[in-house]
Length: 184
Picture 1 (cartoon, rainbow, N blue to C red):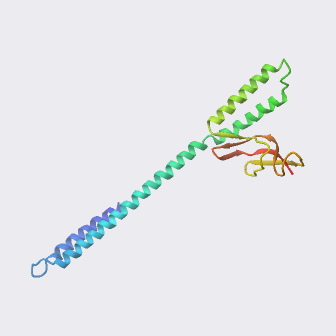
Picture 2: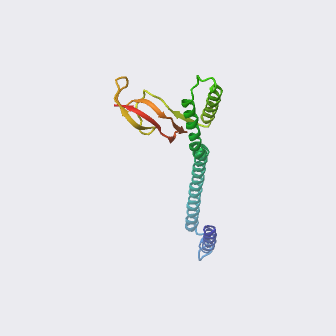
Picture 3: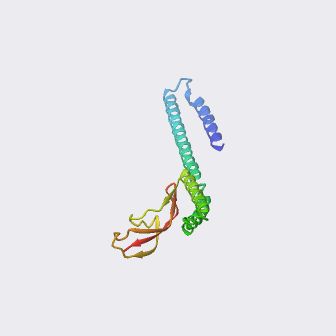
């Protein structure tokens, strides 16, 4: 607002000065002064156009930053919920491992837990959560957490022998590293 007042004052001063100096003492038109004023107006317009372009670029940058922030918020809004959901997935996986699927009395419970786990896995995949559970790949300290190392003739050194607990990634952001056993 102050900037606008300053510009209006400046224009008013220019008008007053120009009226005084456009016509000289002999009531003749002062061409030199007219040229000076035209140059001043031209420079003033250029300065204002530069300001306009600068503000326009700033607005575009704000729009881009806002768009990126909104996209990140959308992508990672589920992060805390997802971390809590991982505990449920872990419990379902442990249940499946502990149940004897060949016991006829428990087969329906086993199948129910297995279907529930598959449904949850499909759901988390739908929302961009990927499972880290590969074996026989090189150990990556960003995605894996080694809980122990074992000497092995079957695997190259620093390769994953077994995944003890799955890791998870949400849109390239690590939710939890996979707990792994590594060969030495």
